Image (cartoon, rainbow, N blue to C red; front, top):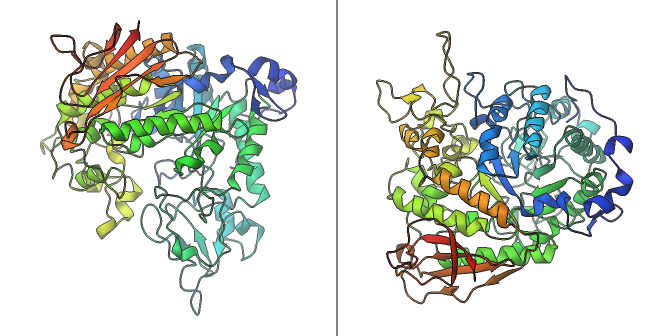
Length: 623
């Protein structure tokens, strides 16, 4: 945050360096004085984009370190271009002690030396832009790393100091301050407060290595604006804002023990939560919008905000970030009514915001969709994906993972998603149909959730969707232990040794079944998930219209019988776009008649008489 790049000087911020600040309204569709969207043009690419999320440490290793890196991303830019995406979003690549997979940031304006240099980053941006691919980066404003210079200064400063005011320090309760200020449990387990040497406590909503920042502090606000400018000046087109709803906090109240700080919990729609989705957070993002609008074209951001759907629109306002993640798809089971509700809520929220919706099936925080859909589809009133989390806790046992069925449903789901108006966010490996790696040995896990949760709250964490990608099928073999993981080779994730030197194994173990999902194998199979993604993204690009009008078709209907997955009600989801592009998805056991029109793409084979079978989607051009 307060350490600038070691090998690249910061650019200036005069009007000339911002490329036409005064005329931005005419050429970009924004009124810079108000931050309001006023027209439709290419500067608003993000409103209908296909965005591919890269988890850098698990995408491609160019050095043999066992960690993916920036040059590895650059080396696969042709693959990304051929996939047909409009933008890449990079999860954190900043210097980090990896206490939370890079979301514990030591320095916000540099590249982790293990992943490359600022020069490597500039080369990657150039390679992306030359292929028409935009670049979006993660920004983590809720907390820093405990190794950030600011926090180290705070630890070595007295109570009430300027250094401590950048974070949230409080005196403890009890006779001698020996008890934490509240009874809160952190999101990754354990207390949400940690005591320091002089007796004070600091707040960390995630791990003790991620102290929460005090966003009432003006220095914090200004330093993040400096960070936004830094990356904009280095070619970044947009930002994904981590825990966007958590910055503003109200800890000066008497009812704090009555609240839960679980980031996934239901949140009230009146802004009354003490740590999440408070009204004051929007003052911060209105300041950020002023910065974004000083660039031509204006930059945008998408908020990770697990908030009440009634409040999502605030983050997506054209006077704030522009978009907010609609996580409803990522939460839902493969049940017609749940998926239908997700679409309806996403469309309504986007209309309310005056923006477009975002559609997220998977990301680095949730089990992979192919495995979620392969398990029994049982609604849970508690934590989302409770079935998947229980299955993971048992190393992939206890429930049957029907991979053939999971793949069929995942194929149907991606067509259901990609035809919708708005932006689709695709997590790396979903295009390969990867399943969750559920049986990673516990002593090889990295996720703090697995390390910090206990007893009834135990969770194996998120490493199963973060395993390094398989690129080459034949580059992987077991060792004498035969534990089902490739202990020799890396399926092309790391380079092959050329001089007999020992290469580091990938940072998480890759299962032997990756052989069947490797890129080189799927590229030669016209029925593979990769082939389906490429076809779908190409058609989506050709048929995409800025007009986001949407209507349900007559075939769209709920079922009144238990003819869907795992005895749930089935039915059909069917909708069309303004240009006649339609999607029909059948959740019921009985095949259905299709409307009149031309079939452009199907997620699976139709019946002999041309009807649509269960767990299958079709794209049509209606007559």
